[in-house]
Amino acid sequence: MAIKKTELYSSLWASCDELRGGMDASQYKDYVLTLLFMKYVSDKYKGDPYGMILVPEGASFDDMVALKGDKEIGDKINKVISALAEENDLKGVIDVADFNDEDKLGKGKEMVDRLGKLVGIFEGLNLGDNHSDGDDLLGDAYEYLMRHFATESGKSKGQFYTPAEVSQILSKVIGITTDTPQDATVYDPTCGSGSLLLKASDQAPRGLSIFGQEMDNATSALARMNMILHNTATAKIWKGNTISDPQWKEVGSNGNTQLKTFDFAVANPPFSNKNWTSGLNPEADPFNRFVWGIPPEKNGDYTFLLHILKSLKSTGKGAVILPHGVLFRGNAEARIRENLIKQGYIKGIIGLPANLFYGTGIPACIIVIDKEHAQARVLSATGEASETKRGIFMVDASKGFIKDGNKNRLRAQDIHKIVDMFTHQRELPGYSRRVSLGEIAANDYNLNIPRYIDSSESEDLHDLSAHLKGGIPNRDIDALERYWQVFPSIRATLFKATHKGYSEALVKAAEVKTTILNHDEFKTFAAQSLVPFTDWAQRSNLQGIEQGELPKQIIHRIREDLLESYSHNSLLSKYDIYQILMDYWADSMQDDVYVLVQEGWPAGKVLRELVAKKGEKLKEAPDLVIGKAKYKAELM
Image (cartoon, rainbow, N blue to C red):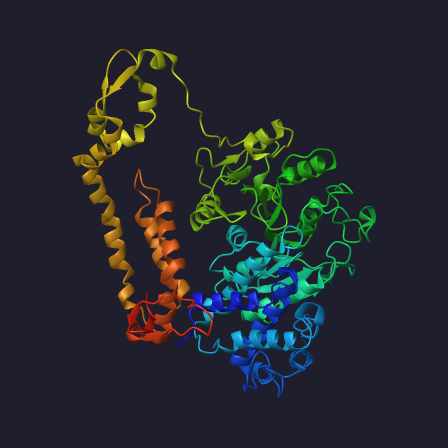
């Protein structure tokens, strides 16, 4: 039976439990991800002379299993990994973690037992039976681990990971379409573990040609492993400092060396880098990146934006995550900002909630770059330009999130709303609007979003007359006008006008909810609200799921249909309804769908007996108990 996502995730996290205590998450992630990689390539490519990864004799995960209980298990595991690394040009990528480190793994029997348990956890996973390759089961597991490692690593060591939800937004707003060819290039100059690059590549029907650079050696190794786990082993990731020593270069038509240019770029560079000039004289930059201005010596935010602008083709598009300060800070940064606005390079700005990222709690924004339509975005000398392209489109998404532990996290509905508004350039009061360059110039080229979008909630106004004489101000009742348009007679049921400008309640406060629910208008509304759902459920045809289908295509089809089904309801938020489906998918439905597309409907007849190891409790709640035996159904 193919492994379920939740089962895989819980097993992987159990492997982390074996390593806690001897090191922090920023270190033990190297061990866990290396073992995940070894198990995956062994299950998938062992014995395949034409596989993406060659697994020579003595270099498979099975060879690690044979070492359980061996007094020299740590040293011998290192040799197994080294053999695979040498065969596949992965030295410095998969052999970063030292499995013979007594300081981290213990001495003698402690190390033997710990590594034996760790290998045993992965031994129980069958990663070769999962046939839905297009759904990146292992890639998703990698993302799951990276999120948890970033959470546990703390503020100073979580920068290697960009939250997947933010990565999705960047990948969807840079203009990749179903017509984008596979040889189109995407670049990330500070690629970390590679999540942004992979999300962008996923937007094209056959993927993109991936290029990245990462300064930290261990993190660049994570990116290489991540690419292989996502079946993109041809991705090219270089090590080194992008600003002082950019690796992606080419010879221009004039014979001089220049930065290589790309079709798309995405980046989440380190915020407010204070030593960006190390090894570089920006006034004599050989790549002419600072023609629009030199960023402050102690703040390199604009450095990366300027580098990306120079690394894009004349038709290139990109998106960069930067702290909100770049939108309004003065002096050198103000001059750079003004120059970029006048050139029309900035297509839009998306303001994000605070505390999304693991390296910092400050709010950030996404700056979307479009060089192809830059001139159409700039006012001509006569003030004439296309209204559909002129100016900068702004989105204030700072209030759409949920709390997740000590961080904030974007929900599926938040992501979809941001992307919908931005890609279709839809204006929504308090959320999004196009801002003309004239208005921006009048504000001294300050791009601080609250100057242009008022997302504040109106305050409750106290009415002294109502407090003293009683009554409900009609303005408070009128504020619910969108409800009265749907329920005109409910208003008359609840309120009666008294003296000028005031009304009195006809129903006791404790009975208001019951009165509304039992009203014929509400019953009609409730019944009509279920009609789109019923029609959607029939169209979804989930009973028709067949083996070989791709789960991610299934959920994409039904979720977009559900969203459209409720797009014309005046009171129900289509995004709230969309979120209900996505929560159910994450909690239960995706596991069932993964089983069905791999094993077929007969899997619904399978009961798996739950057996706990001696001294341990069951990790899953049983669905059926017969005597002392406890069973779990394969389908929820």
